Image (cartoon, rainbow, N blue to C red; front, side, top):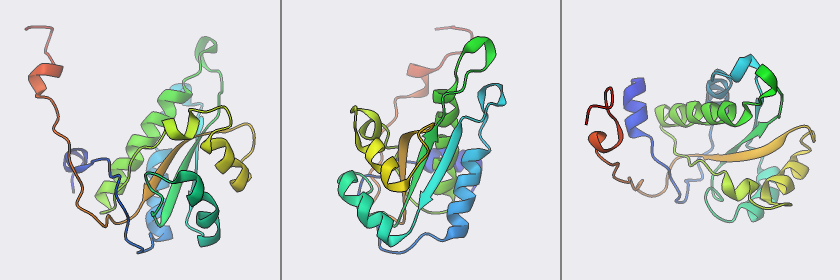
Length: 174
């Protein structure tokens, strides 16, 4: 699969997953893709934790309840707020690039996933903080995203994208 094919094939999957495990080799490839993403001023503010242990998954699944609760593996994206150029922090851009790289790699490997962020971070003591406690994540990190990973048990529903001409222009020639 080419990069362009992976971009066009990728879709957010919110259905159930097959019980088929995701190999550690596949998880490592996905995580390496995330870590290869660009990072503002090379501060490398994004870290990643993959969970495939059945005991940990059983502790985490009741917290997820929604998208990805049946996935055989979960990848959690951690962000560290580190100042860089002129005191700015680019952690949101950094982890966004890492997540997209991983979503494309997941697609290329024949798995499905969905970027689950708001549900992880929307509440003061939200799901992300509860999962971080279970995983004993260092407090310098914020758990910002969950990527469920697995083979889809249902057909992936694709949304229609607006036409190119409605969202992109050359030299603002309309």
